[in-house]
Amino acid sequence: MTGCRAKNSVVAYFVLPAALIAGCGPKPAGIAPPVAPPAEFSAAGTQDAAERWWQSFGDAALNEAVERSLADNLSLQEAWFRLAQAEAAARREGAGAYPNMSLSTGAELTRQHTGNVATDGTDTEFSLGAAASYEVDLWGRVRATSDASLLDARASAEDVRTAAVTLSAQVATTWFRISRQEAETAVLRRQLRSNEEMLELVTLRFQQGQSKAEDVLRQRQAVEARRGDIARGEANRAVLYNRLAVLLGQNPGAIAFRPTPDLPDLPPMPAAGVPADLIQRRPDVRKALFEVMAADRRTAAAIADRYPRITLSAGANTSAESVANLFSNWLASLAANVAMPLVDGGRRTAEVERTRAATSASLTAYGQTVLDALSEVENAIATERRQQEYVTSLRQQLTLAAEVINRARDNYLQGVTEYTRVLEAQQTHQALEISYLGAQLALIENRIALYRALSGGWELTRPGPPTGSR
Image (cartoon, rainbow, N blue to C red; front, side, top):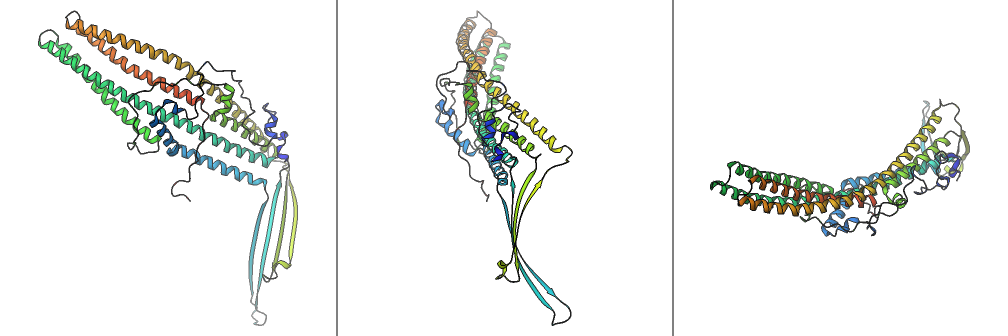
């Protein structure tokens, strides 16, 4: 069709490939971002990440939880219905490429009253008419508008994929935060028992005149601090379970999934691949690309709107006093109309400028989305390396802190050192235990961020209509 002509597109204006528009189809490749991506990422792993990346953790319950969320999460279902709206809008705009036909029927009853019975009477007339109109898309305006709506629908489809990737990351993150909270509560309870045992020892030495009342009070404070931490942890645990339930489309407090109180070892780091492949794969980048293409087609439609419109119309009408004679008398017409804007106060010119500016904004946003995607991958890779070093350092610090506690306690029992040394060593070791759990969780969350940054989505099942709909 003539609507495929590149001269009505702003492809040349933005130095985009002319074939993209000339081909008339919404192809997601071919537009280079304003900033050229690097040739490769920093060195990462060598194993390709699975599409359903959460399965790499080897937790069957987590796998089931994520799959449940993909089926029942209400926000994801909302994204699906937004896609359905965009698809319907694309079909509506596409209807302009076809003739518009209508059929009309009528019946008219006329009663004449003259005051003379001989001349009074009634007349009946039946009519049938058909009309058709079609706009000749000489400049490609109708096709460009239809293409833009179709590209909007493609962008909405990428929104669904982005929402699914984000949801899976949220479920996995919440899952492991619960595991960390369970593990922290177990550590706090163990610390509480240790503090209570120390309190008994300090109290006994005080009763024997070998310790100060201040030492007893400080140890009691340490015991109460652990009890307060446990209470706060229980509250945080309940909040996390409620959050997980909502992510799975369930009522808060009604969730049956229970993560284990152990944080898993990290699977091997996935390969980052080639940046150019990531740009083609990530749904948020693909959405931004479709938005650029849609904006470009709207500019083409605005340019074409400045040219004359040619509309063909045809009609046929018949009327008779009886239905049997309805088709014996026909009146047919065929017409062509040409409408050309003469004076509009600059409205159409302003619309072209507006759509060109919108395309510029979309192209810039596309470039920023690409940069953000590349940055997310590089940040995750760099952070994991340093976080691994930090976790190793904390593990060594814990070993040393345990030795310090043993020595300080022995010296205290022998009367060589003050109780404050024991308390300081105890507090340092207990703080390191909590920090170690937090560092492990940060390492897992960073890996989830890397999986999310590399993910291109996977095959999704479209939900059916909501309950009660027709």
